[in-house]
Amino acid sequence: IERFRSGVRELGLELMDSTTPIQPVLLHDDELTLNVGEQLRAKGFLVGAIRPPTVPVGSARLRITLCAEHTEEQVDRLLDALDKTLVELRSKSE
Figure 1 (tube, one colour):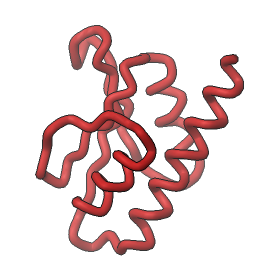
Figure 2 (tube, rainbow, N blue to C red):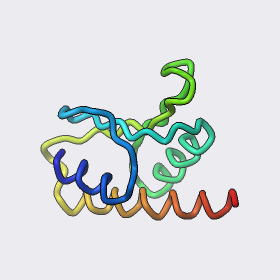
Figure 3 (cartoon, one colour):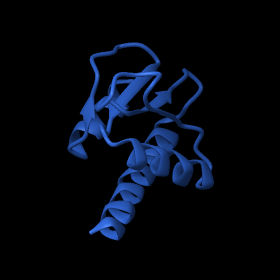
Figure 4 (cartoon, one colour):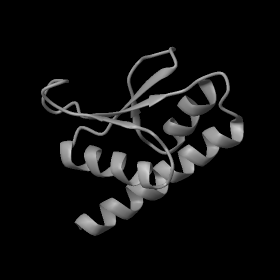
């Protein structure tokens, strides 16, 4: 969990305060959150895209669920995929 949280902070993303295996990464944008979730799934990562009405408007987030069986390499691959996906999607929207 700490490796993931540290990596997300290095990417400049916003985390909610959680020390549990469920790590919410706030993206705030509903469409971006949905697109990131879909792209990560296509890359082999099961990540929930949580948007209103499940959460308040403006607080769309990715729901990352970690477990003790995830290796450091798997966490690093997820962080890399998250970074690349966000760069790709943000460059397309510009």
